[in-house]
Length: 144
Image (tube, rainbow, N blue to C red):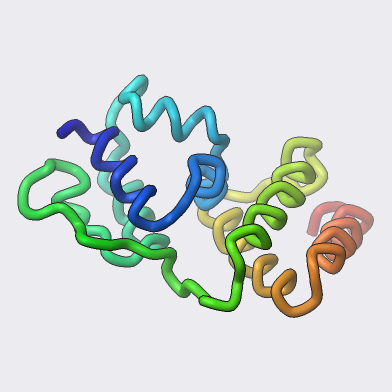
């Protein structure tokens, strides 16, 4: 099994669609598809460390090399069972819309992933409209 197939297995066992997985890294669904089809060079070890930080149950050695046993399950780190999957998708769509328009700038993939999780908790508590309002306020303040 190649590194792209292992990545796909990790993503699927975490219950994430390609767009959701990509959003954790500040990447698009198309980028995740390219990774899974090994259309680019295998990521560096630091990327795998970030993967293990974001997805519980990831064995970095197995993910990189295929040696050892494959994971039986995986889940988003800090996964909150009260955050529904559709709500997470809504947060990702709203956040990506702002990022693509350059309304939120200068965020690393790690910062974007953390922001997605923070916005998910806001959406769970106050609704997706609260997330949109929060992002608009950030935009009005100049992206900070």
